[in-house]
Amino acid sequence: MPVQIFRLPGIYGPGRSTFEAIKNKKIRVILKKAQVFSRVHVADITNAIIYLLQNKDSLKFHQIINIADDEPSSQVEVIQYCYDLLGLKMPNPILFEDAKKELSPIAQSFWMENRRVSNKLLCETLGYKLIYKNYKLGLKNCFLNS
Image 1 (cartoon, rainbow, N blue to C red):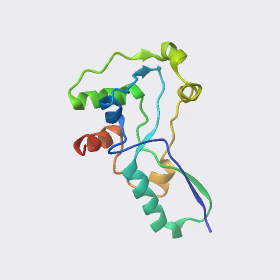
Image 2 (cartoon, rainbow, N blue to C red):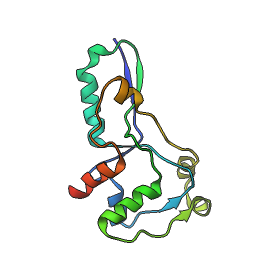
Image 3 (cartoon, rainbow, N blue to C red):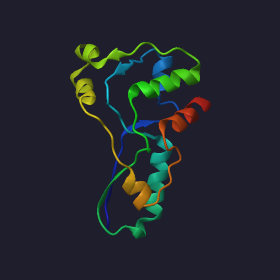
Image 4 (cartoon, rainbow, N blue to C red):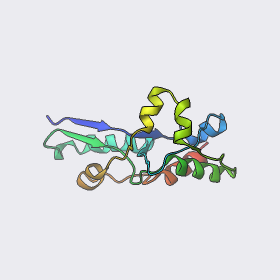
C-alpha cells in the first residue's frame, strides 16, 4: 500500500495569522535580504489531504508531498500586506543582523535558512487545485473572516 508523507511550511488561517500578532502587539518585523518562506492556508492543508485520500488509487509508490502555496515570500511582505489591509502603518523593519542577538537559538536557526518548497508534485503531478494560491488571497480570507 502506498504511503504519503505530508510536509507543511508556515501554517496560517483564521485565528492563526499575522493579524493576531499585530493585534496582540507581538509582531516583530525582521528584514533579512533575499530570504523567503513558503506558507499554506489551513483550508488548503485539509482539502489537499482529502483530495489525495479520495484519489489514492492513482498512487503507486511512496511519496513525500509538500503542501504549500505557489508564492514563497518574505516575512516583511506578508506583514506589510496585513498592515495595509488593516489600514495601519507598519513599524520600521529591524535588520536581522541587529535582531539576531535578541532571538532565541531556535528562532536564530529558523532565520538561518530559506524555507522555500515546491508544490509541483501536489499541484501539477497529482492535480490538486489550490484554494489560496498565495498569501494575499489566504490572508484576505483571514481578514474578512475575523
